[in-house]
Length: 624
Image 1 (tube, rainbow, N blue to C red):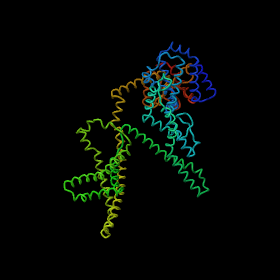
Image 2 (cartoon, one colour; image 1 turned 90 degrees about the vertical axis):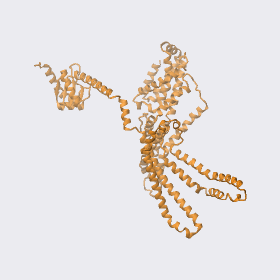
Image 3 (tube, helix red, strand yellow; image 1 turned 135 degrees about the vertical axis):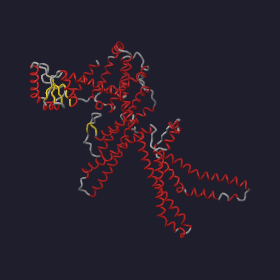
Image 4 (tube, one colour; image 1 turned 30 degrees about the horizontal axis):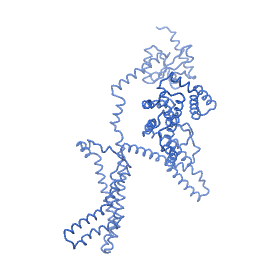
């Protein structure tokens, strides 16, 4: 009955021309569930009569996977070329799930219970697939917002992933996310979530083992969708808004200028100019997150040192009263202790000295801790790596130590240090030469000019050093990032080794080529045998024709080969006794215009007929 209902639904679909996503899946699913309800007892008895418990378990595992994969755009029929590959992926995943689910299915389920559980599994799979589709929907909505802002809403095109209309920018962003989804390991994470869902909500349970957080989570997904859409679209929308705002200001001074017509190409130009680096930054950010998960991060020592030095240098300038007060108290420590005995005065002196030194050094210690942590967090983020705590014999190996001492990295570090000294030395010398007249006039100005001149000179020195440190840190970070990515790449030897491992040993490769040639040679000989004549050119082209009166209404092209293969065809034809005819124009025309296992084109019937007459004449001629 389910098959009958499915046939009726397909007939209605064909008559009404409704899309398969709209009618086919939903209607057929409803029809199957209704059929299970109506024929519950009969189907239950027949199921247990002709099937095993294994089939029942498989029927309960697959609906969740099928319905989830149907929703995902990365597994759509337009992407995979049909539903067969998607179904194969679902069945392959079900093989891994079956052992853990087999023990949770109670025996003796009737048709009604089975139908309810299958319906529940379908709805749950659709829910999981919808959650997984949120980033894809967000990027599509982001692309639509961008195209709407730049005035290109009429330029919607067919989305190859979903077979529906979508904006060009949305399709581009979606393709980018699909690439990241597979290359970044997100598909494996999705499979892990599907496997975990069978433990959170078993197939034999009508209600999941959930808490109140589930409802909050599902309600928050819509907010998450809108947030992702706005975050992705915000940079381009802001840039196009500023361009449009500038055009609006221009229109106030040029009323005859048609700003509306000019705004669309200008905003499209701005969007296109920003979209390429924006996608590059998204891909780079995703790559950095993958490397962070693998504990492989880029870190510049110069950046940490620059932040640390500048923080310590600006600390006394930021809190001068605090440090001057404690320094004054430190210098005046002996004054109130002069009238005391030596041993008592020494004891009190040491206590107060330690107290003042603690208050003087504590800000520097805290600044060092905060600056060093901030310098590392700016580069790597909050990352915990327990692998560095594990013992590694390479760290205590003398050979590895010598390699590190005489490595290219140490040479680069030495050159960077030398460059840093030269750059900072040049900046300091330039600063001193500019302030030399002020320093020479200090004796003439008096004691009151010393502190202002010294403070001005220190401020300029810190500013110049800050610029130099930041320039060195930026260059060092770029160099470290480039070296880091080069180290993560495979070397030429590793690529050759991996290719050799994939292709196998040279002996196996030679054996595979030999078997391939034997198989190809056997197929080629069979094609030559069933040919009636071989038309050649004379050595570069060989075309086989087959014509049997009463069997083939027109001559049939059996083979087409060039160069070495054509010579081989000619040699096999001579061995098998198949006639070979040299017709240069005809051979070229047959090779260019005909297809293998197809009849010859109509415009070549006349010249091929002459070949057939020649062939028949050869057959009638008695051998000498």
